[in-house]
Length: 114
Length: 114
Image (cartoon, rainbow over the protein chains, first blue to last red):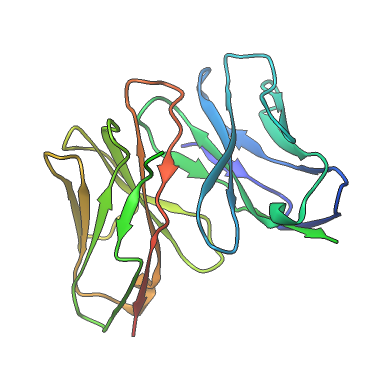
């Protein structure tokens, strides 16, 4: 079974600064998909960014980028120019194949301070 | 763009009662997933359906059942409710044919069992 670990229960960052959230996972599969989801106080689950394991290039979405290290099974999220609206719980998630379930990490509560 | 629709948004039931949660996936999405998120927890996978057939099963109690209908909407039926069933229930949908298709989540149904 796949496991996803987020070792930082809480993090904080000043507005406009950069922060990195860590995620590691365990799998015996060679191809899979990784995601970061954001859950603000509204509790809605919002997709932030996704990475396909067979792609070596790190995914980027505006201020959000990932550092995907396949050999180390690491998938960190970097948020640049942090904004107050980035305050949320961030979940790292793993998906083995198309149609399969998402397995979530425990989450990291990020607070952006003014 | 159309999103995943869940109803109701909030539901209050007493112990031993029955509850039914509904989910309407994004148009053309053929796979539906149900997740349960307890307070301060990461979402836990319950069950999924692809083309009206159960495709995967997670930690869903025997008191719960679910199905997907011909119009692809899904219902989660919960009987003999217990206090511990109080949680946020998410439905998500994806398009099976696209291997990197992420799960798109609804806004959730908050179930409170008293």
